[in-house]
Image (cartoon, rainbow, N blue to C red; front, side, top):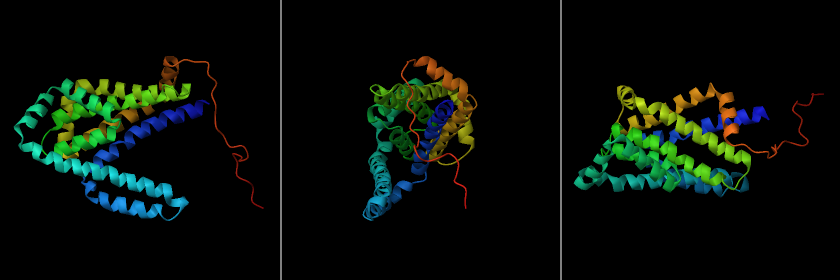
Amino acid sequence: SLECKIRLSGIILGANVGSTITAQLVAFKVTAFAPVFIIVGFFIGLLGKTYRYIGRGIFYFGLLFFGLALIAEAIAPLKDSSQALAFFGNLSNPFMAFLAGLGFTAIVHSSSVTTGLVVILAASGVIGLEQGVPILLGTNIGTTVTAIYASLRLSLFAKRTAVAHSIFNVVGVLLLWPFIPPFIRLVENLGGTAAQQIANAHTIFNVAMALLFLSFLEPYRKLVEKLVKSHEEEVLITTKYLEKTLPKSK
C-alpha cells in the first residue's frame, strides 16, 4: 500500500540518522566501557530464551566497541610516524579522501566501523576535519554497495529499498560537496575536540538530509518506482485474526 511504502522510506531515513550514534559514542569514549557491555550481555543471555536476543545485542554492541578500542591503541603511534602522516597528508585532496572512505566501507560492509575509525584517527591527531568530512561522505556512498549487493537476488521491493537508500546517500553527498568548506567552518564553530567535531559533522549531515527528504517523501517514492519497474505483485504481511480496532470493554 501507499502508506506502507512511505513508512518504509521513513525507516530508511531513520536508519541513516541512527548510524550516527556510533560515531558519537566513540567520540565520547564509550569504548572504555566495552568490556562491561560484553559481560552484561553474556549473563543476560543466560537468563533464558526470552532474554537471549537482548543479551546478544548488548554483547555484540560491546564487542564492536572493544574492537574499536583495540584499533585506537594500535593507531595511537601513527601520529609520530612520518610515513603515516605522509599517507594521510595525501588525503588533503577531498576527492582522494572521498574515494578512501568509499572503498574502505565497501570492503568492510559497515559504515559504522568506518566512521568510528575516522573518529579515532581524529582523536589521535592523525587527520582533521578537512580529511574527515570527505571520508565520511565517501562512507555514505560506500554503505550503499552492501544494500545493493544484498538485494540482487531478492524481491522487487527489496531492490527498491536498496535503490531508495542509494538515492538518499548519493543526493545528500552531491548537495553538500560544493559547500564542504563552509560546512567545516560551521562544525568548527560548534567547538569540541577533533573527534567530537568529526562525529558532529556526521550527525549534522545525516539529520539535515533526513529532514530534507522527509519533505519530499511522495516524489521520492515515485522516483524509486520509476527507476525500478516491474509487474511483480506486492505481498503485504498482515495479521489474520487481530482487528484494527480494540475490543469494547464489558
